[in-house]
Length: 130
Image (cartoon, rainbow, N blue to C red; front, side, top):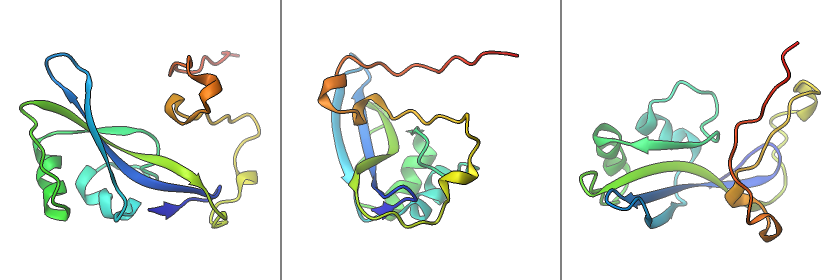
């Protein structure tokens, strides 16, 4: 787990879906790993890996097995690894929110919204072209 600039405590979540019916078959939290621990697993050229879920293929599963004792069966399940917000703590102040453009809006993933928003769906925001 690690704390990001806005005070959210973040941990890695591995989810897997049955390939036959595409239903969620399981999920675990990988609390002992930081963002930097997973960078060699995911091999994503992104300054922050907190932006979504990444599919785990054979190559990524092999690198993940080197770090953990997680058993992965890519023949039976589709796996996805992502960073999830587990709650608020004190911000680490490593990023100043004022450095971002005023028009930028960050949308939380639907699963992290309060129960009042159960009907929320993940959609891409539409932007007005000028």
